[in-house]
Amino acid sequence: MATDAEHLAERNRLVFIIALGESILIMGNTLYGMEEITVRAVLASLFGFVGLFVMWWAYFALAGHDTQASHGDESTSALRSAFAYAHALMVAGAIVVAVSIELRISHDHTDAPLVLTTVGGPLIYLAGNILFLRSRTGAVARERYLAAAALLVIGVVGLVFGHALPPIAVGLAVVVVMSTLAVVTQLRSKRALH
Image (cartoon, rainbow, N blue to C red):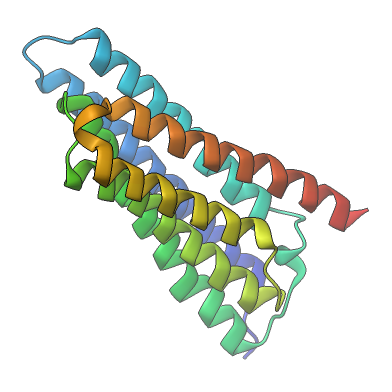
């Protein structure tokens, strides 16, 4: 019995979309539960939403229909690695991102849990990206490693200087890195298909 790679891909895309949707519900629930909705909480929500959009964009530029990875290795081991393990990491990253958004909305100070989740979610997601690409194409473009390095720098700066940084600053820095990755991934994907 042959494994249908497109069927697996579609199912995993839906699971990823559900994980991002849960993040939006968590944002709304966090705002709803606040006694007073502050400008800081609204800005944190907006940046959180932008971060989720960017994660969606980066994901579909990588694993969407008609990408180089969507036409990759279709061996059982490659599909298992790409659609079981790699996607589990990407979904886990999206869940950690949801936790980080909740912390940035509800906290007015930057502490270690906020920094670790804000940086950790995208890092877990990128680990899934790297495994997905290795499984499907056998290669990973260096921008994924550069993005991971930039996130690690943001994490170190956030942990060392967090008391002097507003939570939104850490979130904004992560959104800039992930936005850059999404743009580069989209451009690389378009070039690879032409």
